[in-house]
Length: 101
Image (cartoon, rainbow, N blue to C red; front, side):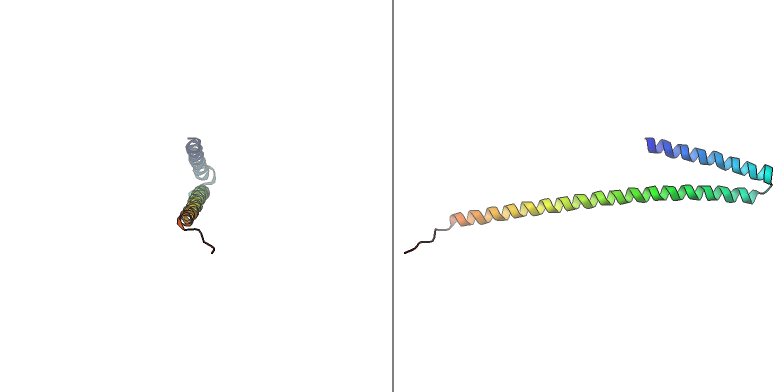
C-alpha cells in the first residue's frame, strides 16, 4: 500500500509541477515550446525511475526463483543419494557372507 501511495503522491506532484511550469511558460516567458520541453523532460525522468524500479523487481524475482530451483535440485540430489545408499545396504544384507574354507 505505501508504494502505491508514494507513486500516487509522486504523480500528483509531477502533474501539479507540470501545470505550474506550463503556466509559467505561457504567462511569464511567452514560449509554449520551452514549457512543453521541460514537462516532457520531467515525465521522462519519472518514467526512467519507474523502469529502474521494475527492473529491480524483476531481478529480485529471478534471484528468488533461481534460489528455489537450486534448493530443490540439491534437496533432490540428497534424497536420491540416500535412496541409493539404502538400496545398496539392503542388497548387501541379502548376500551370503563369504565363506573361507
